[in-house]
Length: 414
Image 1 (cartoon, rainbow, N blue to C red):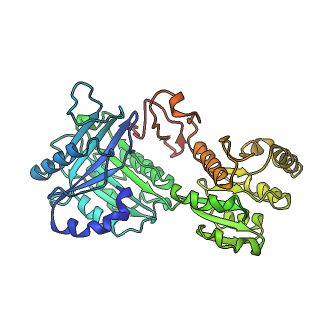
Image 2: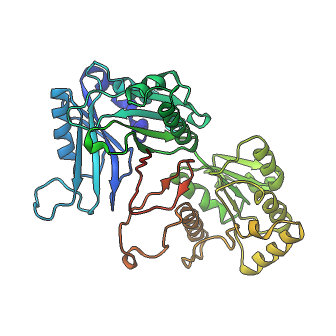
Image 3: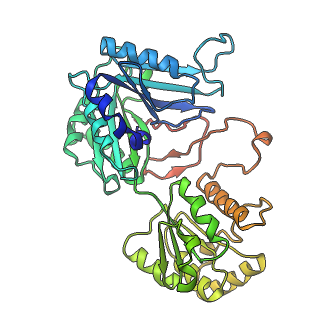
């Protein structure tokens, strides 16, 4: 649902004047185009906002949504590949989706319609979370839905969650099952995780209740050090990946150039001083990416020493293998532990045969993406087998785990 926030505002008139239903992917396996949490809104007049599969199953979902609005019940529809029936609604990519469909504003106990209106008022990058109780059977009633602002600060104490936990069958936040669910929710909120918590472990298809948590934190930061030919194309290329991009250079004459205005902010400061100050202020976290492009030891070495002491997602440094060897020696002389130096991505970039600054930017971002997905093979898709899309799963602590074929974007703990 959160992916619809940028366009929900324009749907406000539709939300106000007629019934609508929400269709949400609650399980995805194999090669599927969209992840768990992706939603599509269907109005009573057939107007649609969003997409679940790029066109494969949307027609069938619209029909089911209109039926749900007619009878007031929820639906759980499963879509997969059907070789036997060429006219069946299915996924040509060969994966499988479970889509939960629910009327949102037909009155009764459902608060989903109210939650959608609240989301429509959110900014496109505003941190927010949506927690919904789902009913698995076709006869299920309305769900509870709670919108939480600033989920990175937690939110298990939100007043609306007490009612949601009670309605989910877990009891309440004061009993053992309720406390366990609240702890799981807290982990999801703080880590920016989206997933389904099946409360009884039997699955949505049995009619058991479940909770879907969708969380969006503030954009992760990409800190680029060095205003030069290589950082110029990297700044705009990183923006579509969702990063808030900061360029840092100690030299005002370089940092102030027009070609770097694609960055969200340009800072003139000694790199290691700036990074240390940002870390001390709590503005560097485990999602932060650091790319060192200065290629000057007087900047690189103290900066990398500072960076390698932090808990961040990625640290990379541009340069030749010879430069990397010199960096390693200098960092060892400064007392940086070898195991920390081993975390440094240097020379920075995947081997794409990149030569121009624009090609190097692609190479750098390709390695950043690959580092986020440790199970990636880095091979051409034609040379691999198995599902193309293998989203990362999440542990009970909220830490990302390597993808598996048995558990993809669905969290089921009992």
